[in-house]
Length: 557
Image (cartoon, rainbow, N blue to C red; front, side):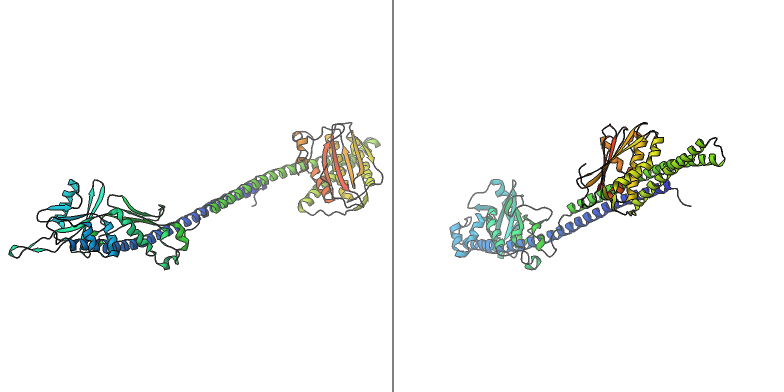
């Protein structure tokens, strides 16, 4: 069972809407998937960047601990231990005496000390080259007494004591001097000697670590990722920054690494915050960070939305055209029914011999002839329109006598005009030869004359004129009707279009007559337009190339 046309059109339209919406949803899903994939790729890349930053940070911690621990603290505390034994108990080594026990190229270790210390575990006495605050001195003495039994047992032969002094980190490096013999075979705990570590003096040592070479293996970054692509920040136990290198652009690729307890906790509580700049990503084996595809995705979404909107517009137009065609079928049916009714009625009158005089017989035959002509004209219009829709119009265009064709067409139309109470006047120039198709021209003129009769008042005079002008033959058909409003002079040439004032008027029409006029005129190499006539009515103008010229249609009216 087949669907009715209206239901079929509605079904097709609904299906098109579903497809358009589905296409938009699919485009949105694909865009989301692409964005999610790019986000996932970026997250994975960021994780690798953090791993590489952690690798570089671990190497920085290892190098720093080894450099400061051995080249600095170990050498300095060794020199202090060598300097102290000749001194009396409670005396602290002086800086120049300590320097005397260091080779010239090792004396940079002196910069690591702010003051020298000596602690006697037996008496609990703490001496320093510069006095310490009382609270700090008490806390440090307690810590030194606790560690005196195990100091020096580590690999560095010294230990580090870190104290948070009212929000300020203080670090002390100490080691025992040689133990002295005691009574009854017992040994007396040795004094502890050392220095307070200059935390601000660590910066040059950290800088030296960076200057010694890249922290990342060359194989990771193809030799293109140096320490300049890394950001470093060393903070102490109190959170104060003691060293910084590079711009602080950590982003999401920073790692926080503790220094650990190497060299007996020399950097106890200190942490390294390190980040690998994402600009280095393209040189890494991971292939770099993906570029944002948001602009392309937005363009795709806009295109999808535009296509959807265009589809909806086309759908509306299809529905509008379907409605116009439905109305056209209704109009044509009505137009066909009227002449057929007249023909059938007067044919029956003649067949049943219901005429009383010869004049009535002639009148009945004349009505049949007029309605047959009208019916033929209507059918020809529909056929021409259908051929134009299919692109199947074929014209025989060649030079012809335009004046003779116009006179012939007007003479054939005059009986219909007279019965409508109109008169047709012709004013034709001599020697009018144009390149045209005779049948097409006749159809054009009949449509224009029929419109003039249909929309003009009873008793009007219709004027038909033709002249040659600048290589063209111009035909004018003028009526004395209400004319065509300027705002609708372009719309009336479209199929199924009528003037708004005629939509509810009693004047019948199919809405394709002027469309056929324009189609046939253009196919003959001409153009047509409408303007205001001299009597206030409408003047329809058709312009065709004159014979013997290669003129093309002009754009001016």
